[in-house]
Amino acid sequence: MRVIFTLDFEFQEKTYSSIVRVMYTGGLTEYHVRIMNSRLDRWLYDHHIFMESEGRLLPETVSCNQRVALLRNSVQEALHAWMQNQLRIIPPSERLQPGNRNYFIYPDNIKKAK
Image (cartoon, rainbow, N blue to C red; front, side, top):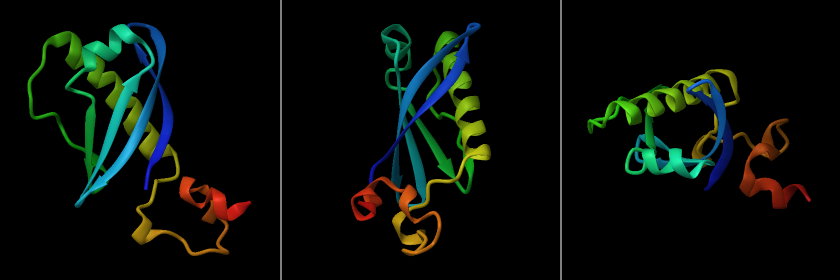
């Protein structure tokens, strides 16, 4: 299953947009972030994956320079706010069944809704 959404975040007093792809690997959820600004996206290169376990974002294990750390922190804050305020994306094994009111929110169920 592929889930993709947009995420806006603030960095250096400007608002930027990013595209986030969600992947489920074992017990972890990975958020792969691509910033829609080529300069900032290059800064985030090799540091664009944010891991979640049990509803919490895990700290990055590889150190990076201060500029990249500030950028990651800005994206992580926005991602954390999204996780707290939005409907959680639920893995296929935990989904609601057809007929429930939230059944059609998942991208791979859109074909079934037509």
